[in-house]
Length: 447
Image (cartoon, rainbow, N blue to C red; front, side, top):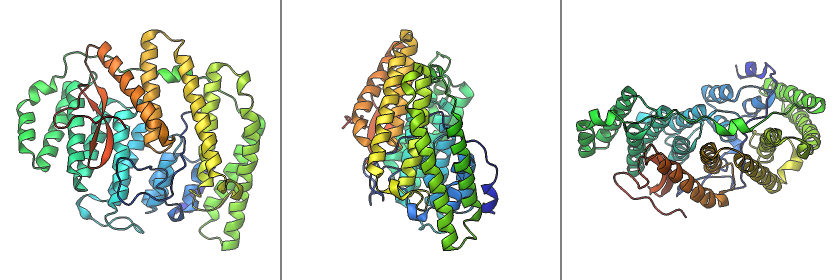
């Protein structure tokens, strides 16, 4: 059945938001503390190559993740999600929830074939990503943010992380109370679920207090503003791939489709030949892309942004190959150069962020303020998803805190602001209606 997914060669559009991979250890820490890198946690030896290479054949990433889960290839789904290039954040957040539930199912039912029962460490990494998506994604609407927070609250409670569950429930409550875009009926629906969550934790006092005030809380802050548009998208132009790059993409897609279709039935020798053919196509594509990216200085600033997105997307594929995260060896020369490829990714993303920052300086003050917050949110989300080197988190976090506070203040201290808190040995970014942590604990200083 999986072999059927190998068909349908669709040109893989690599322009758009790419993901930056950082160089970390191959396995997760025994006990997650503060933050665990989702990308570094990929267990490459458990990845099924025939499914994993399907995005290289032009298949939609969402479809491949779903197909991997349906085939009980949970680690393949995890790897595809961790390295995903094109998934919008609403789908990405939903897939992290689904993966968490496969690693630690609600109610304790059996997990997927090949996975240890109650793999709580992996589930915690997934719910960590869910909470990061809820607070940091510049794409999501507030209904989706609250939904992700509620899912994380339920999951963390099931894993015994009660302090984190309370934080997630409080975040959902804050979104319902202080969002500037939700309708009263949406606020009430979220608050009803928050009440149920606190009741499930045995916190009858919090649940009862919220139930008593639900009518006034559902009214919201009394003001509304239209949701901000995607300022960054307005700055980005486009590029036309030259004929040699297009031909290389088509050749790579054909080689990936051949591997996907033939892998299960192939002998070890035939599998090696399939992998060699795909590796050769990837190497050829890398050579022509290097020449293409050399054209960047000749492009307009808007088109340079599009090219930088394309470059980061390609380097992410290259880094995944180098880390054997497609489940088999494809380009041996890259495998010995993973740190250098990570450095290239880091440099490309630094260039991308700096280029956006320069473009934001050309906008009116209000648009620039919104755009800068969106850029910092996106950059910090890349960090938290394990796709941007960890040493930049402290700098980005401080800048994001300042930008979020400034925008919140300019709106008359209305709406939501991004704060940080620690719980259960981990560090979280959360949305609040106040620049101080809501309800229980105060936010900790950024380290």
